[in-house]
Image (cartoon, rainbow, N blue to C red; front, side, top):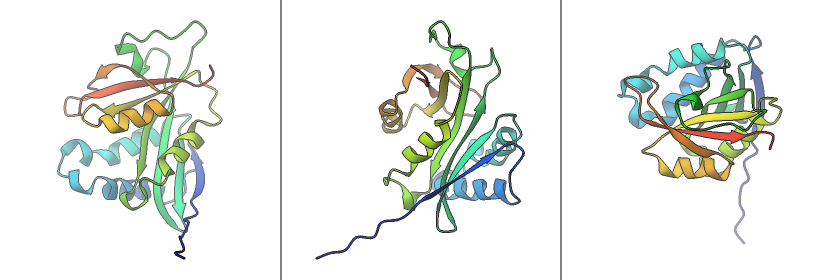
Length: 179
């Protein structure tokens, strides 16, 4: 009889104002591993700027998955300021009463730990205690399988946008957090 090894993944929570030394570098290293085949792209090379930008935002939260001491992936985001929600550039119309949006900026899992449910756990943990009405994220339109995954998590495509001149074209995906 063949035995199987089950990896235990621990989730650790971080927020604006309580980031340990080396936290940002850890995210940068996970990103470099996750995008090893695309690091010649200038947009991907700017990831350290995005880490600084997001981690300095009030309300920033991050969940990091660990296999022992090894970071396997992370999910992070922050609430968006009213009027600055990413879905505003689309035809999406929130129902009356929806007043706040949490932006899921990154959900990333290193290649060795993919297809094990880690991204689902990270995403769920990131949004578990959010009080905002909506969650929004962007997914590269050239990755339809990722978009389909987000749809299984309750997101719907609201439109498309290119937030930076050198960024990919993204599908804007919106999820109601409190139906």
